[in-house]
Length: 196
Image (cartoon, rainbow, N blue to C red):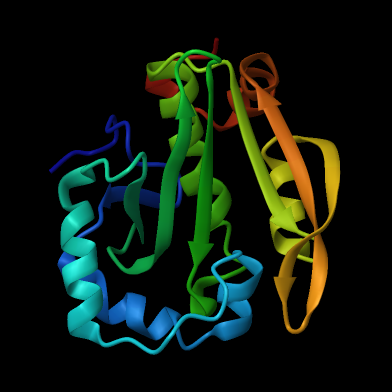
């Protein structure tokens, strides 16, 4: 099957709807407590694979649940390497946000950037949003590098707003306009999309 012109495929990854079958990997991800904390997911109560399967079923087939749509990130070999969320969509003001996580064994390979570019293209080029707002906890150097690589600009800091490990941390704010996205993304776009 030729998927070279498939919108949801990047150079390294492919996005697909989250599925209850992703529960096993999702459960393994929860064993990485520091990784969950920097995603601002906090320390969660213990769970089971079956419980996660039921939760993921609610989001299957890109179902919008309370403004949140979840995707699974696969590498081009078909391995489940992480997840991506599309949320905080505001049609009136023309902005949206995302969250991305890559499982520990797959980090540092460019999957987060490639997958996020796909979602940003959808938000800007298909849904006609004007701006993407994002944030991360101070000290999350991987997320800071990701935002800068995607063309996001630093927009500020909310002091001592996130609590973990017994103390408060600052939240770093980032923003990316459609114009900034187009300038940064053009070299990465598939040939069939053409440059804007």
